Length: 579
Image (cartoon, rainbow, N blue to C red; front, top):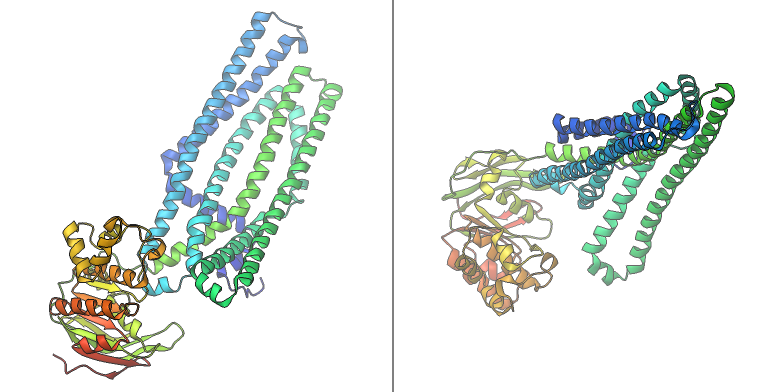
């Protein structure tokens, strides 16, 4: 195998060079299905498929006496009563097979939906519990692609495997029916059919590599579309609408080309199989009537059985191609799931007593993934009830310091102490319950103001909501809205101004009643009057909680008890002596 230089995940690169890759992926998909189904549900599905197949085979056997009663046998035509009796029994078996098939389809659809929902839920759960550094390494569009398109492809693979299983169960029943009627004709036709299938199999290329390329093309399209939605303001400002439109149009063309190739493979194979089935049926009639001297009734039923087999063969060929195309989604899903699970935060960590004395940094250092030092040798104390302003140029390490304080990450060197207790990874979830964070670009969900606030404190009362809004200087504009707390804020809070969005985010953070409140440039979009109101709120909160404010605003610096300046990850101005 040649060296793979593809920038996409290594597993996908290897798959392109492995002829057994579709079967390996199919085995992994079966493992996922077995876990989702359980033995009872799997047995029910197989049992229904077997029952329908047996009823179909028995119905074919009953056609022989019916045809003989019509005069196609050696005894000549029979009475109308016996003919109707035979036809009635045949129709009863066909109706039973149809009822079982319908029940299997309904049950299979329900199982498919549960299977897909389970995959989505497992991946979403892993995403919500992944550590912050691992999350930052992900491409958002890849996660969206797997949670939506690729999981749907796995649902399609589920249907394909179920249908292939049913088709496989039908083969023995149909072959047994034909063998009981004419062993010699059945064996000759079966041998010719197998030879024809081997020849047809060489016509089409494996759809597995097309499935891999489809997955990549869909990921590229999703990434570009996500960038367009997030960066539309920049696109318009740069006048780059046509360039972005051309890029996405090319992505659509790539997808269209791959889908056309897939359909072409299916069309050629199905046409060849239909022609082969017709030739085999004609040869079977000739052999039965001229060479093997079979009764016409038996020969017709054998031909009908093989016609049904050819129909199943056409369907199975189409299903297998669909399965090959969808199977690469197994690798994409498992790769993302394993990556998230490997980077999960420790669950069920110990509780942490409320912070009441001091947060201490002791020679703290942290490196970026590319090796650059984000923080180095940071050493200071932050007593409880203090307002600390952190300043410095862009890239100085201010946001990294805030992430450490928020419990999103832990230092690579040195120690962060909470009332003398080292903040270890297993304590991060407990510590975050004591922290409220207001980021520089506050995020609001596409819901009402009430719903956005209650996300921080689901049990909060109406009075609690208004108190938090008052503290954040947001109650006035919320009361002026036509629907008050039940006003929808739009996508990411687009229905309110930047300043209003930040004040709502501050109110949401205060609703948690945090011991530490982190404001990451949270007043940067506020006008002077609104900033003054927020600073008054912070002054009222001083002593009740600890506040860390990352800021470039002089008013916030003047209001702070202490100021810490960072440059290139180092502290330039240290707060007063440690407690």
